[in-house]
Image (spheres, rainbow, N blue to C red):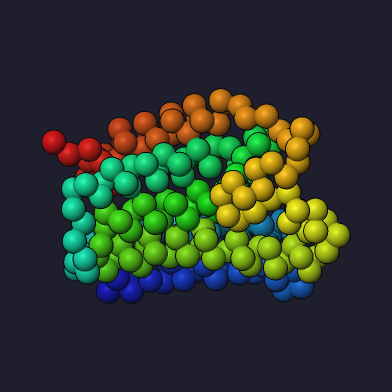
Length: 209
């Protein structure tokens, strides 16, 4: 039963985020119920799906699908650090777009992929596989939406940014935003808090003796 609840949570999270990928559908829904109610419902369902999935994850029987050797934890930690850097730099750090076009989605994708490496069991595939799918898959959907919504603006975005890391690093030439340390430091702080509180919040230490 708990597994089905977890599946429902992830499906709700993904389904809700499909609506803004279709501007006409979003406009129709927002026009019918109002912009503020739409945003409130969207946020509520997104948070319920995301945090509900994380909470119920601990209650699901963990049936192993593949082994997760201790060495894999270090790969997970590196990906999680990068994930937090993308999260921290997604707003207010234009230089991050020299690396990837959608830093927030990259952060979510790395978050899911990192946990998949160390959680090779059924609920892990559902939860973290769903988050990885959202992070990486929605980049394609977002690009398609933006290309249709404003082809001219999209042409410039496509010229100067890429979903492939560092592919357009020098596209803006001398006018490119300079790299700043604040997002890196913020990502490091978030990562340190994640490591520190992980045993309390999720019942398992990140670093094991």
